[in-house]
Amino acid sequence: MEFHPAHAGALWFVPLAVAFVIAVGGTIALSYAARGHRLSSYPRPGRRPGEDTPALPAFLGGAAIVVALAAAAGSFGMLHDARHLLIMMCLMFAVGLWSSVAHTPEGVEIAVQVIVTAMLAHYAGIEFRNAGDLFGLGALNLGILALPVTVVILVAVAHSLTMMDDLEGFRAAFAFTALAWLTAAGAASGMEPQSRVALLLEAALAGYLLCSVLLRSRRSAARVFLGPAGGLMIGFALGWLGMSLTQGPGRSVPPIAALFFVLLPVADGLSVALRQFERGGNPFERGDFRIHHYLFSRGFSSAQTLVILVAASALLGAVGYFGWRVGLPEPAMFWIALFGFLAYHAWIKEAWRKLKGVYFVI
Image (cartoon, rainbow, N blue to C red):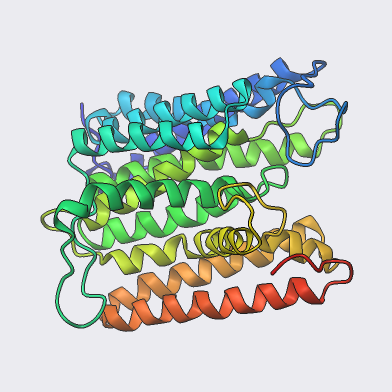
C-alpha cells in the first residue's frame, strides 16, 4: 500500500522513522564487524606506508544507508518512485567498492562510472535536456548533447563530494544539507514523489550521521565512515535527485537553483581540479588543498570547520531556493554563481600561496 505523508495524519513520520532506525542498526552492525580488525591494504586518505587502517566494514557506511532507504521505500509503497535512484546508488556503491579494494586506476574508475551513468540515464529517461534561461535569451535546449552533459554533471557532483574529508564527516554533512533543500524544492514545486524519496534518503542519512557521532565519542567502538564507495553513491544520488526535479514535463525548479544546493563542494572541487591541471597534475586526483584543509591549516578545529562549511553550504542553498521562490531571474542567478566561483577560485589560490611553505599551488 502506497504511503502519502499528506494523507497520513499523525503517522506521516513512520517511513522516516523506519529508515532512520534501520540506518542506525546497520551502522552499529558495521561498527561491531570492524572492531578488533585492521586492513592495511584498504585506502584511507592520509595513511602512511605500513600504517594500519580500520577494517573494510568500517568504510561501508553507505551500505547501511541504501539498505535503510530500500527497506523503508519497499515497506511503504514508495519502491516504484525510488527504483531508479536505488539502482543508481547500488551500482555506484559497487563501482566505488570495487575500485577501492582492487586499487583500479582513476581513469578506469571514471570510465566505468561514465558507462554505467549513461546506460542508466538513458534507461530511466532522465537527461539534462534543458539548462534553463541562463542568458536571458530563452531556454537553452541541449538536444543531442543532453546525454553527455548528464553524465558530466552526475560524475562532477559525485566526485566533488568524494573529495571532501570523510574522516570528519564532511561528506555526510554536506549531503544532508543538500537533501534538505532538494526536499523543500520538491515539495514547493508539487513534485511529491521526488520530495518523498529525498526526505526518506535524508532520514536514512540522519540515522547514519547520529550513529557516527555517537561512535566517535566512544573510544571502545569502531567508527564507521561512508568510505569512497558510500561517498560516490551519495554524490550520484544528489545529482540524480536534482536532475529529476529540474528535467521533464511539469518541472518548475530551474536547474541553476538546484546548482546552489551543491554549489560549495562543486565549486571547491572544480577549483582544486583547475589548480592541479594548471600545475600539470591529474585534475581528477583527490587533492589535499580543499577548503577544509585550508581552514585546518589556519587553526580551526574539525568541529569549527564543519560548522563553518555546513553553514556556508546551507546559505548558498538558501540563495538558490529563495531566489527561485521570489522569482529572481535565472540569468541573475547564473551570473551570481559564475562570478561567485571565479571570486572564490582567485581567493583560495592566493590564500594558499600566502601560507608559509606552500609555494607550488598555482
